[in-house]
Length: 471
Image (cartoon, rainbow, N blue to C red; front, side, top):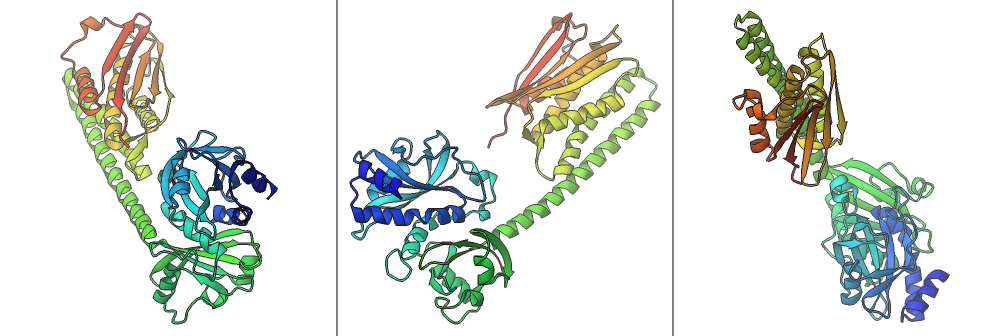
């Protein structure tokens, strides 16, 4: 607490009473951090209107912090953290705004004002989360950003009119005293319990009478500081968060989130995943059946050109089947490009390699996901280029190497097929070659890319690029 006192005296014009309130709220930061699963800070206004000073911080217990070091005592600049300065000046909450931390990390901030008895803003509570978190984490596992200001205010004032909960909250909040008696419930909690059939006011009731899971009050207070459970009750699926507070008047916080909708969506996604798997599995089987029929037909064909054409068609179909095989395993529309190419190589080694030659094929480079349409196009191109190398690059040689190199770029990525064969004269390429025309057409029309070839007596390198998936 001496740190807060010294920082406020050095950098701010806050009164002793204001500083005492900042110190009181700082004791609540760990509980807010655990409930929101985020890094939480208190910033206070400095004598420079474009800067604020970080006076307190808390890091979540059950997940890694975004910060390597403490930032207490460091300045928050307007150009980096506009949300903090905005709330300090206007006294209104700022939600989900981009910011740059003192460690130059990109985050999203939700900021709530701290007011003194005169309603003047004396600081802000900042909740920070990874800017990519909305993509990488299930949303129902996160507390809504809107609860920050109301939670902070009501932790300080359980019985008065200050900090009344507004009606836009989506989370239910109930606060219990040391004896397990409910001292505060926000409107969402009141409405939830009415929906569940409660006739009496839940404020004044004991925890054990309004609990939604098997935990008793004694069970909760004997455990760790933060815990989460999930319950099914009536037609609802609810996530219940418990957090303890070691203070004179507050014993336990209970936050309830209705995750019914998210669970239903999760179930629908699982069903869709199963359906996708089945569809891709059937497509793969049908393609393999067609390839088998072409293989039988090629054996019966007497004309050598017909046999070659049928074999090439079979190879192309199997390269597409390889993509659908991976999609059938994943149950989603995106696949790892390296895995697709490795499947193609497995197919080529099984069906197409000349047993009299020792040809090594390897894949190196980046691995990233592409959608099914792009994966199919890439598999056809890579299959065609590898087969072309096997057929033409190693004439007069007993062994050789083919390397497929993958490079992931920001806008365009590229794949190189490189062999150490005898090479050829690019100027003499047959413009009527079906395989080459297929490759050029797919690269240009399906992948929006370019195709380039370089060849010498040390081998051949063919590179094609393609535009990355749009986010």
